[in-house]
Every structure is written in C-alpha cells, then in structure tokens.
Length: 96
Length: 312
Image (cartoon, rainbow over all chains, first blue to last red):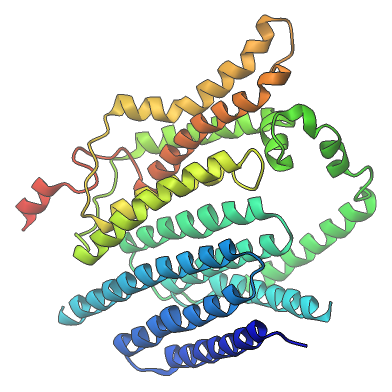
C-alpha cells in the first residue's frame, strides 16, 4: 500500500507531467516568441518545481531533497534571466 | 523490467531522431540546435549505461561547450537554407551498413568480455592511491594515455593561439544577465573544485572540472558585463603548459631512482594524482576557454569598453 508521502508525491508528479505536456503543446502551437516564452517559463518554473517537489518527498535522505530544491532555485534564476534575454533579443530584432 | 525496456527504447529512438535532425534539418541553426539536444541526450544515455564520468564530460563538453562554440560560430555564418543532397541518403545507408558489418565482425572475431578488465582494475585498486576506478585507470594504470591527451590538447590550443585574436565579446546583455553571472560564477568555481576533489573517490576529475571552469569563461563572455583583469600572454602560456609540465615532472621523477616512467611511489600516489589533476584542471580550463574564444583574449577582456564607446 502507498504511504501518505507517496500519494502526495504521485499527485505532484502527475501535475508536473500535465504542465510539461501543456507547455510543450503551447511551445509548438503558439504564434509568436513572447507567447512561446510564456509557455517555456511556465514549464521551467511550475512544471520543474512540481517535479522536484514530488521527487523530493520520496527521497530516502533529507539531504537529497535539499539538493533537488537547490537545483530548482538555480533553474528558477537561470530561466527567469533566459526568458528576459530571449524577449529582449526578439524586441530588438523586430525593431530592425 | 519492462519499464526500463521502454525507457531504453525511447532513448534509442530519440537518439536516432536527433541525429537525423542534426544532419538533415533545413537550416544550419536548426541543425546546431538538434546537435546540442543530441549531446544532452547522449549524456543521459551514458548515465543510463551507468557511466556517470562520461555523462558528466559529455554534458559539460559535448552539449555545453561545443554547443556554445557552434552557436557563436553561427553568428558569423549566414543562416542559409540547406537542401539535403539526394545522394546523402545513399552515403548514409552505406555508412550504416559498413558500421553494422564492422561491429558484427569485431564482436565475432574478438570475443567480448574475455578476462573481465574491470576485475583486473578492482584487484589492484588499492595500489593506485585513489578509490575511484575510472580515475585510477586514467591517472595511474593508463596515465601514459592521459599524458599524451594533454599534449594533444596543448598542441591544438597553440594552433588556436596562432590563428587570430579572440572574438569580441557580444553586446552587454543587461543588468539581469549580470546578476545571473554574479550568481553563477562562484557556483561554477565551487563545482569545479568539488569535481576535482571528488575525482579521487567518485565520478569527477580534471576533465570535468576543467570543462566547468571553461563554462565560467563562456558565461563571462556572453554576459559581457563583468570584467576580469587582463591576462597577459606569458600568464596564458604558463596556465596552458602547467598541466603537461606537472604531469611530465611527476612522471619523470621515478626514473631518477631507477624505476619506470610514471611509476608513482606507493604511499605518495594519491597526493601526486591530486597534484597532477589540479594542474591539468587549470590547463584544460584555459585550453577549452581558448577554443571557445577563438584566440588570445585582448586587453580589457571580456569587454573592450573603449572600443565600444568609440562605436557608440
């Protein structure tokens, strides 16, 4: 039988899969770079966050969970900056 | 069991798809992006094959640095639309046939697993001075190969040094990018040090650590905001040669006391390997940075503000 942590974890992981699937679909279907960027940053922040939260819950040691959360924080910083950089590049490109 | 079969099957399918994409996509930019994705997937495949050392090296060098290098090269090339040649498929199928034939011939002629080499390594791991078998092979049992690899890298970087001055740093990418650079740089240096130290008893080592340090150069160069003190040619030469010179010095020492080349004195082996790896990390980082920058970094690297002011 599943424990409570495993139940919560599978819910979170299922949520992550849904965000990833929706985000990928949006990335393929949305018309311009800014909308696509919106989808992409949602995958990085929310999808990856749910994935990390789900996996952190079922780690045997708390230190592994802490490491995963640290990776998530790093990905948050880099994805926010990348989103800004790509958007800025698209703006300068569209002005030319 | 069936789950891992599925995962492996998906990985194989993705690898073939990405390889085909990087060969046959319509524009050069797409091919490069397919190739970067291919490198990342290769790292995952190595991890799945339980070769974390290779996975780390592939992720850092194959996907990261090579990707950055190819993307930078793209900016100087016009993004032409390429049509796959009709004869391309013919050559590809011929190559695939030849590869399959060679693999079949090799596996039937040379029996695989005749005398497990992993057993030979683990039997003498105690004497190597480190507890991680990959590092023991690279820096002790087969140190000669690694020494020559460093020499080859040094030759390549001397060639690059003689070709041209480094590329100009791209335009300043904005304050947000500066913040990320300030956040990433110490972390990258810390990670490099961790990988170097970890190499003695876990996956890691000089190549991975050097690649991570070189990634710091890429971040600095791309951000274009944070400046490093200028590196003179003499310092650059010292950094480039350090790894090979240290390795050679340690390797030649035993000859004085009548032992053979690269035969480390037993109790010192661990410290000597760490010494060689530290030198090699610095040299490999410099070499890979040089490969990315495409030549000797100019004064005021990475941003030549005087020139930028003149252009503005």
